[in-house]
Length: 278
Length: 335
Image 1 (tube, chains in turn green, red):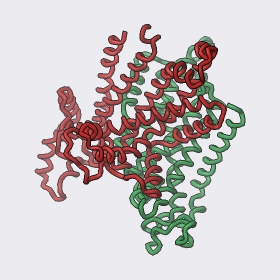
Image 2 (image 1 turned 60 degrees about the vertical axis):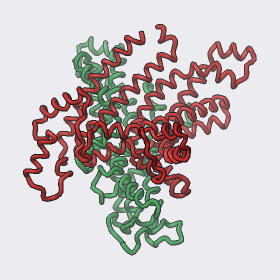
Image 3 (image 1 turned 180 degrees about the horizontal axis):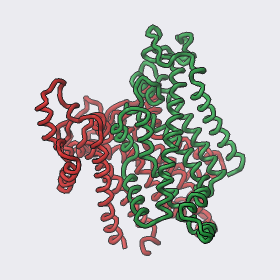
């Protein structure tokens, strides 16, 4: 892969994600309306490009006359929160289990590997749907569902990589100068996995955004009046024949975000990760 | 070797399935929603509620419930659905064929188009078709099947209303089918109007499911073909003066298939999992739609049955992939 294309991907992905962060953080400043404020006289107003657009509602309104632009902007907060928190927690759980399974081996490894096998025999979507139903509605439920389902993505890669690293000279050296096992794992092996983890983490954030949207779509996510992109898609799907943009606009947001995280992850992979590049 | 290997793999599937069963069961027992509360009219008698609870065995401690359920499973019984009041086996078997038809159609579509794209990229390596294939597969992989489904609805049902949005068949064409495999049955009976309607309903959901797999197959095939094209036997064929198309199809293709089957097979399990949402989006009456309804209704026996069925399909599929790998690769076969 030529150097320039690599950089371009990191820049593109980074720019999209930076924009997402700015929008999410500055949502109250950027949103022209309260995302929950209803204007029943102006419901189903089309976006600005239509001749029938209502003034003041740049991207139109939904069936209750709520401003779409403001709802999309506030939806970015949910998407970003889920992406950051869920992906980080999934990475933490998966990495921890992968590290100890790979390094200590034996019964511990057998149990963790078996668990991963069991997890891999569920369709992930079905598992998160079941789980979200178990935990109940709410942001925490969505985050928990993602962590519960996706820790295996990290666990498998980390475990395999620890098995490789364990045999390296620097580990033998660290053990022979008398460092404890925990210390070797934490201070010697883990730092070598950081590039791999960073790439996986970025890709997982994209996945988390999609899962949040999916759970909102099937009606198992955040309370229905809080604007989330998945919830907006679901509302749009119900009115798709009257107002197709209601579904199209939040989809655009999700696709842009996911492409952003993917580009960033792929770019980082090319740039810093010798393990996943293979 | 294959038989011993097959037996070993089959035996290994048992603890995995048991694990799935236990995980789902325990997970569902901490559900906050009460399945009985969802099926009775408001204001029902306490005594009636208690009777129903006993009827579905929900009054017992969780370990007892689990043991009872596992005992039933061992006899091939999955219990009764609480919301639909039918045996779970009947419900699952009634919906499974629709899902299998959808997944097979998507698989077929993905394999054909993936192979075509991969071969085209190698045939025109370094020219614009290669870039087009790379672009298509990049996009098809980045966007999940769930969003593809919605995009297709937007494109072909709303903006350009060409295709039916929901269901499996036009209601007025609903003949009395003997089996649940409508597509195969309508073909066998020669009722081609029904077949056409079935295919029209199948097209968009299977395209949505197929796109990521198509991209995966095209990508893997492309790199495997490029590798195969550098081998001695290809050089030999070239020296003999065979044309490019013949070299790709006759010489390199078969050898490039092994990685396609192994990696594409893994992706196929994702396709199967994807049916859950795609069926929901297109209101297609398959197993996935049943699963989501079951979750929404807190129908514990049905959720357990559907999840276990999916797990069984996943495990069977992985076994098939491994076996085809053995068949395709003589080194493994004779090793």
